[in-house]
Amino acid sequence: MIGNLSGIVDEVRSDHIILNVNDVGYMVYLSAKTLNACSIGSRVKLLIETYANNRENVAQLYGFISKEEQQCLRLLVKTRTEALDHVLLYGPPGLGKTTLAQIVSKELRVSFRATSGPLLSKAGDLAAVLTTLNAKDVLFIDEIHRLNRSIEEVLYTAMEDFCLDILVGEGPSTRTLRIDLPPFTLIGATTRLGLLSAPLRDRFGIPLHLEFYSFEELVNIIKRGARVLSTEIEENAAREIACRARGTPRIALRLLRRIRDFVEVKDDKKITYEVADSVLLKLGVDKMGLNKLDMHYLRFLFNTSGPVGIDTISIALSEDVGNIEETVEPYLIKISFVKRTPRGRVLTDQAKEYLSL
Image (cartoon, rainbow, N blue to C red; front, side, top):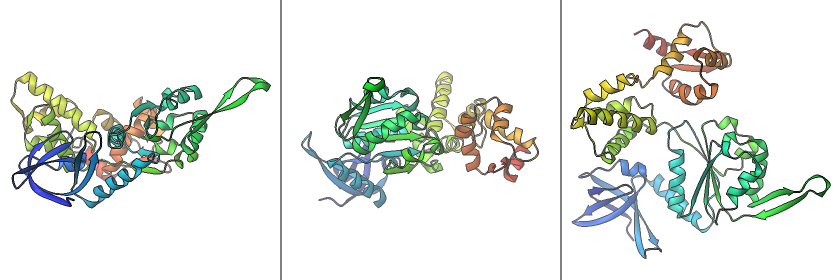
């Protein structure tokens, strides 16, 4: 059994690398985090887990930089004999909740079915989805906080007992029909954990909080994104995009694509720092990653004395309260520009200094 491998990275693919160990090439499958840390020509040392692929009658190598990731895979493999416990993913938008759910189903080698809270308006909608699942399948419900209470109550028994209780008939002749379901894994995703009812939240055995990505992680994601787009990018350009990506991969890749479009129109050969900076400013993204809505929010607080309630801010900006709480405030709080108090939102001295520049 192989415990670890140390060698030179010869190739980097979408989900694995070819590791050259004493002129022998090993195909090693990696997590996204480990994959982003690998580049062609670099020397890496990986912890190795070996698992049989019964479909192809071969052994597959899984590599990890840290023991923590290795333990996560062992836990995942252990659950393959039964349905994985229900998972709740929560955190700001754009951090990869949907992608992570798809990765879980892929690693478990089961089918993936996706829907969203607003689409499940009545019990029949939920029943139609649940009855199509096979044993151990993954059901992903995005925006699960938007489920209405009647749907939640139906979901309780489905999650705990793997069955559905459906009311048939009307009036005195109403009866309950129980439908047995195969064991399945529900993965719920939400940007607003506080809107989930306690009974539903407590039924998830694995709650996971997704946090903003680090600067270096975003740089690696941008470089990899450039390779996928077949676009050459300078190191300084990748780092500049990462600075303005608000700690969010979705935003980083969106900015990269817009800059790539500009480069192609200008028929330039690669993305330089000067090009990246120029395009980002044209897109209204400043050095801190703040956009026009962020600046309107900050200037409104700056020109208002004392704490301001979220409803007042919403009216002043003509923006939905949910949009402000989900997409604007998390990043401003993260960079210590805004504080939430019982009386309302207030600017920090750091934000006031920035606005005065």
